[in-house]
Length: 344
Image (cartoon, rainbow, N blue to C red):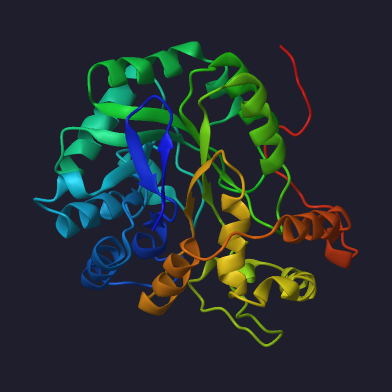
């Protein structure tokens, strides 16, 4: 395993992280807590993974409780990232929620402090290494008091690094751009970025490079919702509780056409490993958070880190393919969030 640091924070993490939403939400198939705990312990003990990314809304605290159970008495062995912002304590809103719809969000200082204390209790710790505000919108980006609260929490020792996660779907370009312009001391952003979905992630990194000298990125949806794992076929059928079941068939068919153009990357590694190496070619990527379902996949992804990096020729070829949408003609992607500059 190799490691990278959040500049100016003292926080160092493994290049391969472990996102617990796969294990705690049921959106990728049901996993028992015992199976989840065994897998994340193996990630740390067998593969050197130190960065574990949770959120209070993942299973209504379940991901944080899984971490506490897995590493009780071993706090120094892991780096904990978690996220707040959805009001999981509003029983009425939870009762009306349907599927993966978003809960109401709260970012007032009183609620943020309350949510952090609840996270600390579930995690059985007195500090959070990396705290991110979960799926912030433009109004939140432009509210300076929100980000000042994070600075105060860091000064108080409750957190060590702070930032924002953007989602749930791909997009949110100018939310990220304005955030690094307005809060240039931000430590990190979590976003969707992968070989097949390079925009707007690349533009977000460019903005951070220009305005926020110490802002690094932790990347989710590293494999384009599994497409870059190289295991789908035209006959793939997703289980009823799997969120990919609700995507149009064109997503599957066009995705398969695209990944066939990337076969040159698999001469000395799997496509899933190459997807991680492509991300890690960017110095501002501090950690990758692939969806990990089982021990076999954990071993595959962890094994990618110590492989030789992709060559400059490989990276150039990927860039040329991406510029032509990998040879696939399709409707433009429908982005969420603010994709054009809007001033107030």
